[in-house]
Image (cartoon, rainbow over all chains, first blue to last red; front, side, top):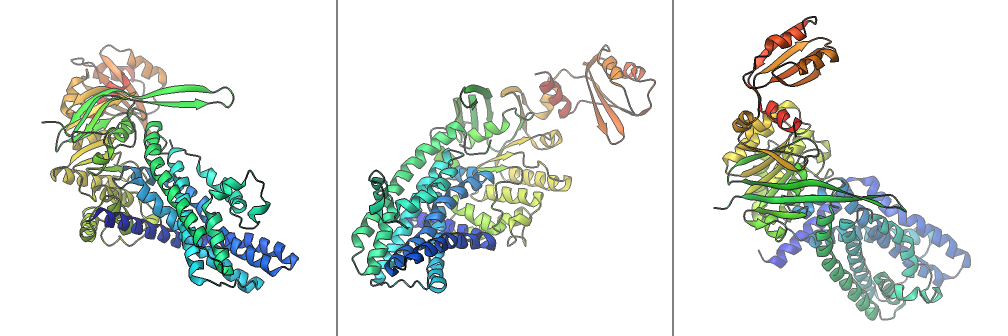
Length: 260
Length: 323
């Protein structure tokens, strides 16, 4: 079988089985959806005080992207740590398949959960708070969502690579969750962030993805933002790929694949 | 002809650090200058107490750990230099509850690993069905692993390790914690795998298992090789004569100490079995100690006395106890 087809199949099967594992626990799956809704609710209640409809749409889109980011930042890192706890991480490494091709679909599965939470948040905004988000350019909006998810999956992949080498780096994902909301401009415009923070926002792919979504919703062209988001996602993927080889060798040298 | 597994002067140390401000570092030598080889089709046992370095050795051979020094080759391939080439030709099974996706069914677990090992999609279904049949899990494949008993999990582990039909199989304490019937089933399975031509490297704590299964055994302790040979060679290599087992009640420590000092006695071990106390006395070759041992316990109630030839366990105790 062609190597590319085999790799694509591997990615597809790992993605599907990861989602299936999630689906088994209705409670966990539900939490994955409810968690962002709680934060979104807080945001809607705060922004509603102002009475500015534009501001509510801004918050609605930001809140919907928040779910994807939370799923990626925390769940992807934690998932790899769970693999270490359950003894399957060593088996993944001992298999001949390139580790990157296993980690990437794991991150993609988390991003898929994030997409679901995005839809739920949008519905929550619509029916619980009456915030309907008018979308002027549907195709641009959908493409913006997809590239945002793909880029976040690559960022999750990059984070998960570090979990292979460092036993406690899963905590990094948790630590990045809230700063990510600020860096990406989910709730506050980038313009009000301090100047020294802005470069970090610019290399944070969700910033561009979300900007694309907002532009598409408002009828402006989202394509430049989408292109930057894709470029950053590709960069995360390439860095993750290169790091995965180096960090795996380091993990074998420092014996960090197992718990002890 | 090269051996299937070749280990030459293999060493592995672990560095640990403790303390926050004043870090102190410690290096533990887990494997020290270990050398042995396993031939094609052989069932080779690696025996040793906890912390002897058995699992560390296996983890180096299956490419999960890099050796600190020395060379290890599997099927002629250096495990440190070309791990990817080794991985596709070996299988790894470890004992215990871990190492499976609890929320997936047995079939999905195998499907997952079949993909990771590049088993072609066309043959996956047939291969998985064959393996489930082999490990006696047919009909249970749709059940989630979280409901499986330890024995079933272990058999599923073996099926997972065989998915890609590896030439060499590494079994790390596969029968640990399994009930006697389950352990026997697993041993029968291991025999069938050897008969099918697999080269197997097995670690175990159970001497009877090693004696029954292994063609050759390496005994290691503190990371070093203590002895290497067939079970018969190991039994005859150690300086053990007759072994006397005395079942008694409430033998005081002073009596045990007195027996240890008797002429011709090599080692004495005492253990509790139910309401009985079992005293195992190993004599030096040629020494007749039954009379003097019974004289030393004369004021105690003796339930049973048995004289026998040394077993592999006696040889193991003599080797590891004296190291």
